[in-house]
Image 1 (cartoon, rainbow, N blue to C red):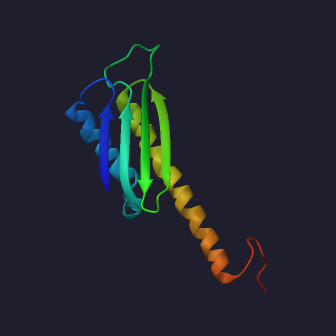
Image 2 (tube, rainbow, N blue to C red; image 1 turned 30 degrees about the vertical axis):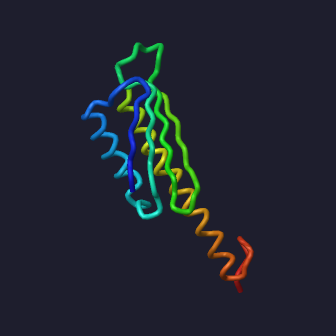
Length: 117
């Protein structure tokens, strides 16, 4: 799994890069074998006045070709990446588990919620 971090306004501080990679790897560690690449784009990592929130967009490309994208606005870049990584983990969980339930039902030849004698 590759993680690519970019900032539209300049270089990313090493501390933020390390924090972002650690949070993302932890959030998606369960699904690491299904993820090909994660791209993170920050609007601006420099401290902002309260009227201009920081924005972060995280896109995950799965091995089956699907894309999962999460966008977050917050007070600073660290809070954005923390919230985005948590949301990405929950979204991947829903996507993976909802797809597996459908396959199990089809294999058994039953309709969902069908009563088994």
